[in-house]
Amino acid sequence: MSAVMRTVRAAAPSGRPRWPVAALAASVAVAGCFLPAVLSSTFYLSLLINGVLLGIAAVGIGFLMHQCGLVMFGVAAFIGLPAYVLGIFTTHFGIGLGWAVLSSLLISTAFAAAVGALVVRARPLPFAMLTLALAQMLKSLSTLQVMRPITGGDDGLTMTFSGSFLGLTQSALGKAASFWPLAWVALCVVMWLLWSASRSRFGQVLRATQANEERMRFSGFDTYVPRLLAFVLSSFVVSVAGLLMALHSAFASPELLDFATGGHALVAMLVGGGGTVGGPLLGALLYTWGQDAFGATGYLELLTGIAVVVMISAFPQGAMGFVLKLFRRH
Image 1 (spheres, rainbow, N blue to C red):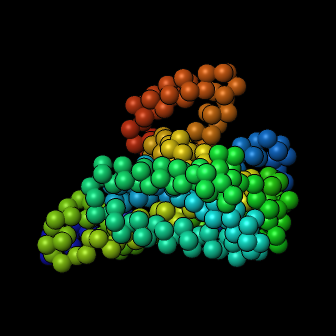
Image 2 (cartoon, rainbow, N blue to C red):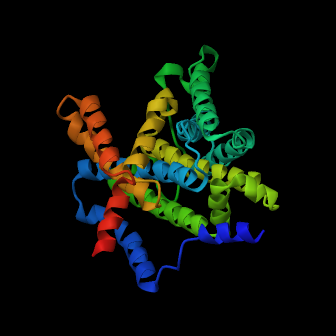
């Protein structure tokens, strides 16, 4: 038991952030809400919104990978599911936007708990493939002819919102300047939530289990429930990203459930590095900027592939790992 406790303590982050760092983080969080007053370009603000939404999803799967060593290939399942639930509830049942948003998150989280109860027992590779199969299953379900009146089939589902969410109507949610504060606050809350979880005893147990699961079980620790909770928390964060995408575009399509959609978040996480909460966000911003720059050349896939290979090869710990290494040297 003492050896296990030493393993758990060793998995704990050393020290606590000093108050100037916390004050700086809070100041950045507040100041970020007023970015539209400084950045007048709708194009660049929309690009930043895309990066932030991708970043939320990347932060979610980065948490699961770093804490449990599990890579979720089926990220798209929890991006597309809340988007479709939102669209079905608001468009077909006429439910108010606020209740529809809450219901979408609850249903997506409950679905994650049900699926997680089955898949988190699997080893990393089977786990990755099971989640991928889940996403493909949902995509096939959304395009079935019998589901077309509900999901819109291959054409997707155009949403009509009634009421407002946090004071934002459908028109305001579709505008970059008014949608930005919602996306930014959601990002800050999500990052704080996952940072707190990673530094808690819960996070210590997850990392110790990843290091030596057999020893943890032998010493009386429950390794199943913490891993299930980590999966549900990660899926919840990804669902927040999918829900925000649907609120901003008022549209859900089978592409949200496609592997390529989840692949963007996975690549962003790898580029930024999953070792820290901020790494996946940095990777998402770099990836979004790269997609825009490479798309203008007409060689999007080629240049993206080259850039990703170079980044991962040059910075095995991700862009954030490289930045932190430079910071420590100075």
